[in-house]
Amino acid sequence: MKIFLVACCVGMISFFSSSSCKIYSFRDISIPDSVKSVNVHYIENHARYVNPQLSPSLTDHLKQKIVSQTRLTQTNRDDAHYDITGVITDYSQSTSGISNQQAASNRLTVVVHITLNDRLANKVTDYDISRSFDYSALLSLQAAEAKLNDEIIRSLTDDIFNRIFSNW
Image (cartoon, rainbow, N blue to C red):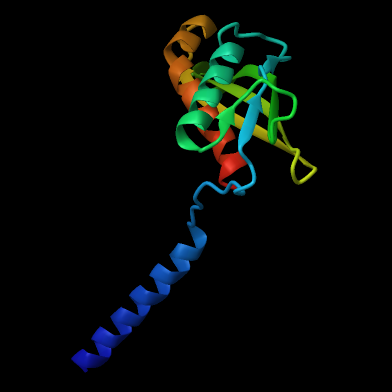
């Protein structure tokens, strides 16, 4: 009987661990060997509300991440193998939590549209990256931006990088 129970437990553990691996799979960076260069253009801000620090910081951090975590060479030439452009399309706040009939928390939502032009494969791919950041309703938008700025830049940079290079 004990052998039967042990066998059942081992079987269940094997089943759940194998099925969970299929659900949560992460891919490494996948860049064809033929791709050697990348041109990351300035990410423009076309949102109704413009955070003046967001575009330059996001552009700079994306360039740094690509150079430090891939073998690609950053160039400003028009013949780069990968050409990346981006536009911040939304930067808005909304109420995300109510307590005693008053706003208790707000949410800042940022949406970036990214276009990857793979010149070697003659293929253009578009991605919409969206992230939300909650903050206390006691803070003004400017105070929340100051507090959340590093997290916003890091999160959006990671999401953009993963969508382009890790097929997320």
